Length: 420
Ligand code: CTP
Image (cartoon, rainbow, N blue to C red):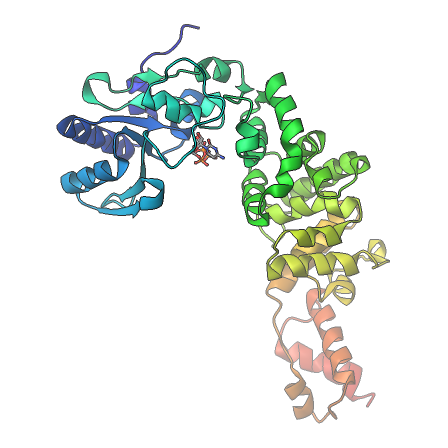
């Protein structure tokens, strides 16, 4: 395949009309102000891959903040400056966000391994980025609109489905890039080249220097992508989990559990959500190696804490395999959240999976036909036994045996009041 040199047609074809129009607006302002302006990053990569992306990042050779001001003067909207970073966000009247950065960034250290060859300001900016496939730019000035700037041959790496860093210190500069590499691998079905993979392995110990927050942010993005089981497996191979105290021996088991969880959601579509939440997948390797307490090194939300707590006590529950009626599950599982229940049962391949999902679906909007007040109204003496009676009632409701307040009252009189 010959190299593509200009992507104007692709831009016009693939980008939403409003995005394309915006780029031509930016082009006019570049011309008017004599600035050289480029479209950069993920959107360029995704044009080659024909994947939707309308995230406009532009780089200006000159002052990004000034250029954002010019855009506002020409087309309205507002500008948010991030002075410490020399960047700005132009918020277009339509509500689109356009990030504008300067190629001449003084706040960044020059990369330690900058090659001897003189790089243009733009190439220098590109050289600071993570991977060759993300280090391509498209000119936006009118006479060169859509011309590709690709000093590190990202196009060839896209073609060979390769994730490749630009220099040997890339992962040392920023260990989250290892997680980004895995994300791009699984999302695009690409692979790191040998050199990049060995740099990733060698820099993995640095992961522990990152704040919990940054790791969590990357995990959210990783486990939102298509293939959580594959991601878990890959992260074992790169020794990510091992940095945080998970044992080597649990890779296979974790991988399998993640697959089962994913399948469970796909088949049963339980009320917990369309997909398992990222935190479920993140927890699996810790769970399979019985090291859930180690998850506390990541600053967790209340919801995450409850999930872990639920898992801990659910692992002791026995006898669920024998249950054949939705209501009967209620006796075991009343106090547990959906996602913890699903997490535990997905890995068991139980014959009564369907009954459990029916239970979960019914309990979401289980009607309350009687309360303790009603029992008193019916002449019963209040006491701790009320709890058992109301639980029995819920069980019958979940089984579909009681469908109205009248039926509930009949049931009450038959089972409890006569015997009082
Ligand atoms: N980038 C980087 N190092 C990072 C994060 C980002 O070099 N640790 C650069 C990459 O060149 C990337 C650009 O900043 O293309 C924008 O980052 P981001 O929006 O996070 O990534 P995208 O490549 O757009 O990925 P996605 O499609 O998932 O948004």
